[in-house]
Length: 472
Image 1 (tube, one colour):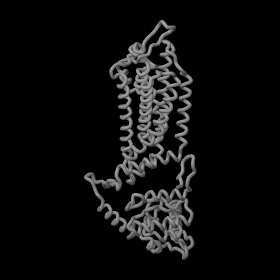
Image 2: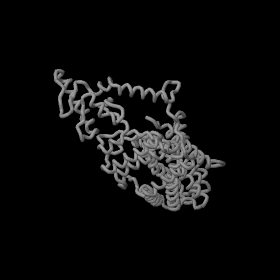
Image 3: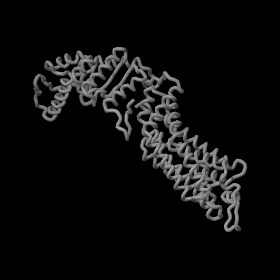
Image 4: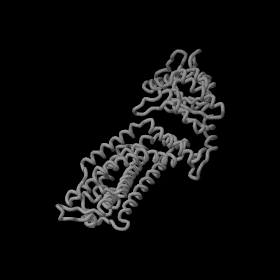
């Protein structure tokens, strides 16, 4: 099985890619199929094969409408009806068999053995040039070019006076009359129906996302390598921290802030997940390939596990034991759980911004604002109690505050910090001085807050995906 291609892998050729696109359009077995120049970029044999297959489908009851530029005669003869345009206006609409007869009646005769498609294009261009010349010099007579005798009237005006124009209007009124019209007078768009269940769509979308990760392991490898390097770097900077009152407490708070910041910025890659695939998602969901919900849940699951959960556990494990934090199993697991929650919150923010903005630059700017405010009100860079009441409430939206508080309670409770064995302070005393609650549910309320923030951003991302307009 060949890969379509990525920014790092060339993949299939342009012709194979175009045929794949057409094949994808046929997945849902649409009754009407719209294509934009399906033969462009293909060699003559392949273009003929594509149009021949589309012709077979049309004979089975499907309506196939596509734009095409100057096709050769072997392709033109498959057309049932054609619509010719000049400067965006109609010059002919009707049966392809009657097109030459129509042009002959108005004075444009196609030479024998000439390709009708080439003849139509030449005639339209000649007529356009002639009209421009007459506009510049009103006294100029009609020009004669070979077997094509141009008149002083544009093809558009001739078509408006013809019976073909009246037939087109009758056909349009008939189509509009059969359409569903709402109370506002606008044609209602029929709801998309799905032939597969939610779980089947979820399985297929998740399988595709997993294949993309397996086939393109570059992001997974780079992210894991970077996290590994940062884990070693963090462990070396805060290597085996002591329990002194001055350095021991300060280094631990600095380590918690550094670890939190690293997790937040490491997960900014989640902003690409919906921005890069935005056009594909809009196209596929609008054509009834799948619902929004299985696509979203499939992407979330396939992103969180390999790119967020496993690397975060690796990072936490290396850094925890190198920094010399509390050597207790339950403290270690609480530490890992807190870091994973922080990673998921950061990913939720990235997902929400990714589904809201089309441009990554804008999403990055907004994320920077969110993260900076969160850091300021995290309790490390500024004393929250010194802030005025009208702005102090922002601390309750800071993921840094909850992460640092949870890590601090987990580490400081039960520890004693002394300088030269005399001036001692317990971890509980330090937490009280920082107004950090550590009794009863003091630890877990920070986890609940992180979980609520995470849930809120993931829900916002889903809502924003549903709000993306599927029709233009």
